[in-house]
Amino acid sequence: MKISTELLKGVLEGIVLQKISTGETYGYEITKYLNEHGFEDVVEGTVYTILMRLEKHQLVTVEKKKSSLGPARKFYRLNAAGEATLATFWQHWAFLSTQMAKLQKEDA
Amino acid sequence: MKISTELLKGVLEGIVLQKISTGETYGYEITKYLNEHGFEDVVEGTVYTILMRLEKHQLVTVEKKKSSLGPARKFYRLNAAGEATLATFWQHWAFLSTQMAKLQKEDA
DNA sequence: TGTCACTACTTCGTCATACTATGTAGTAGT
DNA sequence: ACTACTACATAGTATGACGAAGTAGTGACA
Image (cartoon, rainbow over all chains, first blue to last red; front, side, top):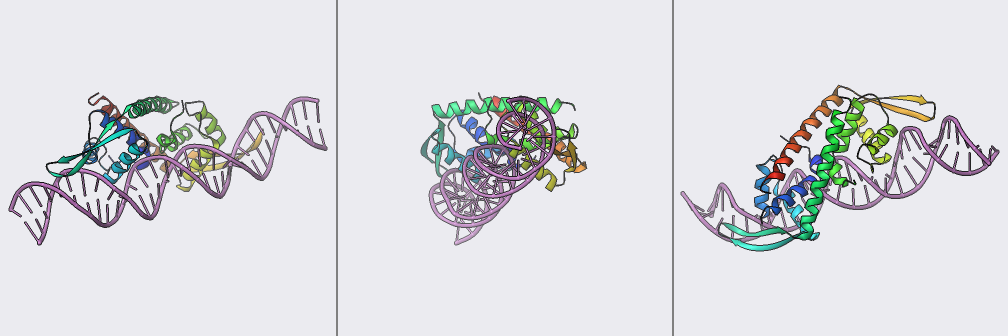
């Protein structure tokens, strides 16, 4: 299913944070992961810009490691600020979901 | 709760469509409604730009009516295209919610 | 009469974010 | 050499929500 790009705004960053929180990972892997979990149309460029942003906002730490099958990978890990941002994200998401569910039932 | 503006992208338009679908209404009323249903910080300017967009995309019909306590109101109603867009919106929302719920549980 | 509060709509400029498109490079297999 | 896959980077574009400001109509009240 092709979700409108606008609907993904703000959401993708949260998903990337979530993915990183489950263990260090890198851009290419995140992209593949998203593509296999309902976000088929998310491309590398999008993921990399998010990762750059996370780094700029100091929510992650980065470590470059050589790979045996291709160029070096940049592994990302959440720091405390990143964990906090992720927690806030889920709170916002939960709140939004709740409100949306209510509005959808309203009247009908 | 103050939801990040980015998270609302695409969502607000859906909510406005939903609200209109429950009976003809106008900008000022929609704004008040949103403010009382979890979207406290949505301002008039935002709602009016959405309404303009809906009209431009021909998803609504508009009818101006005099009011007894203020300037005339522009009442909006969904047409067939609007109903279809609303239905699609809820499908996308449902899909997104489902995926998000899965990702949140993943690993943990 | 003048002022204020509330109702109601409009528009301009700004910002953040996702996407398009393209490019660079390393490794491995043929 | 060529191709495929892995991996990262970035310039430019479009979209949509928001801040801020303005315009108007009505009624209340001093």
